Length: 476
Image (cartoon, rainbow, N blue to C red; front, side, top):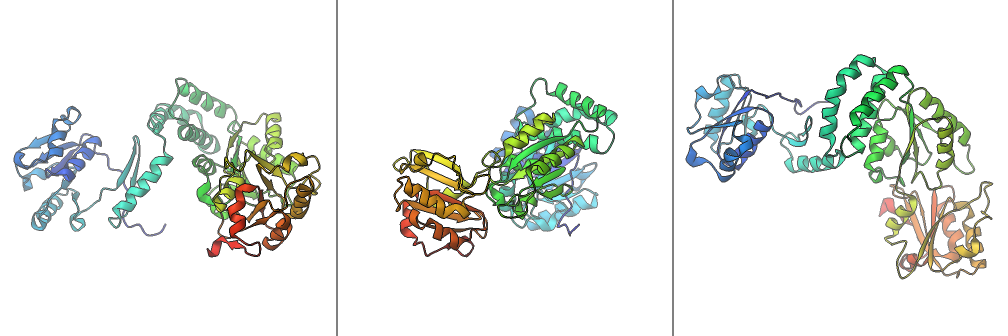
C-alpha cells in the first residue's frame, strides 16, 4: 500500500461524551454531526455567544436529548471522561490552550480551521447510514472533497440505507448457512446488485434474500449468471453507472476487441478477463465458442459479464447469446450502453433527427454475413434524402455503399460524415460528399473501427471540412 496522508477510521461515538466549544455556525454544524453519530454533546459557551444556527439547533426537538448546553466558558475540568473534543475558536492562543488541555487529558481534539491544533479532521460525508462514506483531502482542497462527495452521491441510491438494514437482519442466516468462499461471495454480490440497482427493498425483499441463501446453500453453482453490458463507444466516462457496478461485481469478463483498457480498469481486480473479439478479416473467436464460455463459467457459479462495445442490442449478436443462455436455463440481464451513432452525432455536433432535415434515423449494417455488401437491405428506401442513415462496420464497403445509394437515386452531393475510434484519444473524423465516401474512408484507414453517417444533418460539417482534411481529435 502506498503512503497515506491520514488514516481513515470510523469512530463509534454512540452514548459517549463529546466536548464542543463555540457558538457560531461552524460549531453548530460540528455539534449536529457529533449528535447524529450518537454522541452526548456537552456544549460549553456563554449564552450571549450563541449564534442563530446554534440556538436553533438547541431548540430542535430531535437534538434536545443529545446536546447539553452549559452556560459557561470551557475549562480544563470539562475533558474528564470525554471521547472527543471539538473547538470553534478564533484566537490562536485560546485554540492552542484548548488543544493542549484536551491532549493532556488524553482526548483527541479538533480545532475548526486550525490544522496545527488538530489530531483528526472532518471530511465530506455521504450518508446512507449504516453505510457511511468519508472523503478527505487532508485539508488541501476542501472544495475538491465536496465535488468528490457529489460524484459518489450519484452512485449510491437513497434506498441503500434500507438495504443495509436488511443485510443486518439476514447476516446471521448467511453466516450460518453459507461457507466462506464462492457461495458466500456470490450471495453478497447478488445482494449488492439488488441494493445498487433498485430504489428500496420491496415488501417481499427479505423473503427473496432468504430464498437466495437457501438456493446457494443447496448448490454452489446457484449464483451463476450472465450480464450483457454495453461498454459504449470507447471513452470510459461514457459508461453508465449500472455498467460500472456490473464490472465491479464480475467474476469473469468476456470482452470485445474494441473495448478500451480504461474501461477494463474499472473492473474488479480479481476478475478473470478473456478477449473474445471478432473483427473482419482477422482471426476471431467464433460465436459458438463465446456461447460455450458463458455457459461454462455461469454453470460453475460465476457472475459472467459479456462486455460489448457500444450498445449490446445494436449489431452485437446479443440475440444469439441470450437464446443460448435461455436454453441452458442461465439467468441473464442486459445493461444498455451508448451506441456509436450517438457518439458520431456528438463528435460532429449535430442532431441525427434534425426536424428540418431528417424525419427518420436508420442504423444499418455495412456488410453481410459473407463479408460483402448486404443485398437483403431495402436499398431504394435507404436512398431517402429526408433520412439519416448510419452504417456500422461499413469501412471496407464504403465505396460500394456510396455507388449503390447513388444508383438508387440519392444525390451524389449528399453530405457524409466518417469517424474512426469514436470518443477515444485517437479519434479521427472527416466529412465530405457521398461521391467521395470511398476516398474518405481510405484516408482514415479501412482497418480501423469505422462508422459512416449519411444525410443532410451533416451539411455544415461537409461544407466546413474539405475532404482532403482529417480532423485528428488527439491533436485538437
